Amino acid sequence: MFKTKYKIVADSSSNLCQKNDSAIATVPLKILTSEKEYTDDASLDVIQMVKELAECQGKTSTSCPNIYDWLNAFDNAEHIFCITITSALSGAYESAMQAKQEYEKKNPGAKVHVFDSLSTGPEISLMIERLSQNIQQEMEFNEIVLDIEKYQQKTHLLFALESVQNLARNGRIHPAMAKIVGVLNLRIVGEASDEGTLAPLHKCRGNKRAIQKLFEEMKTKGYQGKKVRIDHCDNEASAISLKNLIMKEYPDADIQVKPCRGLCSYYAEQGGILVGFEE
Ligand code: X90
Image (cartoon, rainbow, N blue to C red; front, top):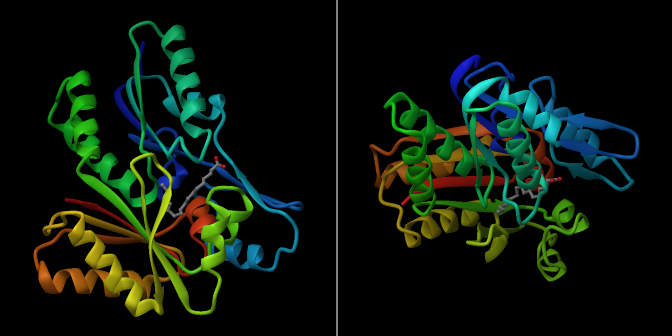
């Protein structure tokens, strides 16, 4: 017998943290140093981790959930919608697909669909919100899958980063891109590409300029006043100035700001801003 009918399971790159037995569960990635392992769950003190990492001399890295982490989070539900960080940069999608196969084999009648977000953070939040709505409206499993795939075409992720050291050191960006950042007061503004990789768009001097560029890029990509989700790494002030800038032109826009959890904080680094929005 199944415990629940529907369940949404995402990884911690979504910047949400929820227990395995809640309707939306999040599965932690890990951040590793030579001395310590940080599990990106509710018990992680993210700001403390960012501080410790800044002082850390040695090599650091991350690891994705394994098949058993996913299976535990599936928690005996009948229908599971699973969303992972982009498969272009992480093994999370692969391990979730293995978990799906295992789970469906072991639980006849169970259905698991794994979405490759080709993105991370706030764009995953938007997908989760849409999934919750669809479940509430009692749409069919296959209908929900199709709706989310269509929705994904209409959502985007932009970012502004002050440092891309951790991305470069772990081979997640082209070395040429790492060279152009890291200069004092320079921000890189970019997007999640259609292939789910980081694509740089602009170099900006200073925070204010970066925020303006983010908003310009949003409009170029078709933003017209719908939902925006802004996740920041220890930079609420910039997140709020972006929110205010958007509200000046679109006073009724539904905009929410939240801090990054561990995985996004590690890669977006101190000051980083991620923006997910609907066109
Ligand atoms: O499996 C693992 O160890 C996780 C690797 C994740 C690598 C990339 C994380 C990026 C986090 C940085 C800015 C937004 C990037 C958008 C990419 C599509 C956030």
